[in-house]
Length: 371
Length: 98
Image (cartoon, rainbow over all chains, first blue to last red; front, side):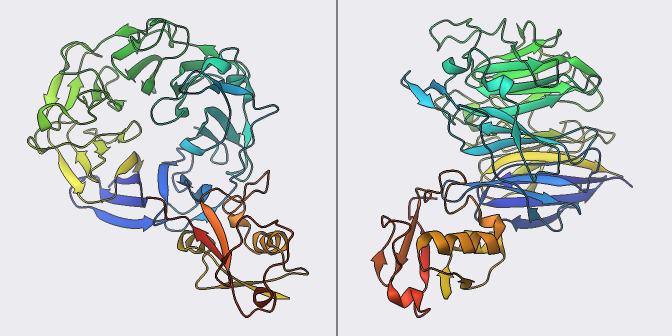
């Protein structure tokens, strides 16, 4: 019978949650790296026993951990992230130039085919790659040195590169997103990049339709339709059907279109999930009711999913990398909250239950579907 | 000479160290002690001082013999009791939230 392994990164360590394919009884293993912030963990689809973790601390800096046995044991690998050449400046919150400074790795994205190749999205925004299992990291400087780089500025969480999507049909195509610069695409393996923000509208920047400056929170893609992208922006849920060349708003009947996460059903490329959050000033669900919203039409028409989720006095947030889907039939949906709950729906969102209730604030959730 | 070092719990966890650690150095200075520590425990590189500038990370301090050595030159001699192995060099994480 298939199994699932959920990788939960939290403010104070990593937790590994495992279950059989019924997703009913769970074993909780952790904390790993107790006391450290685990921004993200992700397993290699080429070798599911290979898992990478971004371990970070304002005191002690960045560590990258690697497991070769499915998370049972871990070893630190390389943590030297050097910007290529002259680091240059980006805009600070007050609009003045500010030097690029490495702070932490927000997102790790293993190659789809090689367990030793992995990409890291970091703050201050840049993309790094390792081809030796995380021992050594090299920047892909074409992104940061895109002409718009000096105009990028941080969002409230810092100027982070938080989303990396690899196109399974084209090894040279990749999408990334930066708060608050926007989305970018490369078609040549990371040498050159193109801003893909046409159609986005952000009222809080001087030019609401600027080429860069948008606070993109997350982007999701279904592997069978890599040209179709779904975006949760600061405000607005968007979709693109031409690899990001143009975006259309699909917020539709959502109670609020602010939020952080977005994900796509494993078997239905037009079924997508978001967790609406009240506003940028109030990072909690509207009316104290935690509800996932699902669209079966790729946006615009949304239905609330609340069975098993708290429907009163709930004021948690769900951060941008804290939702994932498994590839079982029926598709399982997972998300973690800043209140320390990790929820699972083993039936495509119809019903939910907490796997754990009292972890530290959850920063990220990924899931591996295992044979 | 043998220098004793006490690391904060997060770094002991990272380096899989229990209690104090000792390093052998030619000179009892911050630089030589940290060089020896990082050679012995490479996973600590970048966690106490910056990889590139070698400057102490801002939220860490160095104490010994009830003195704050954080702003001493990295090439200044450490206090004699540290050099003689009678007292440890303390690497302290700032109490600053978290």
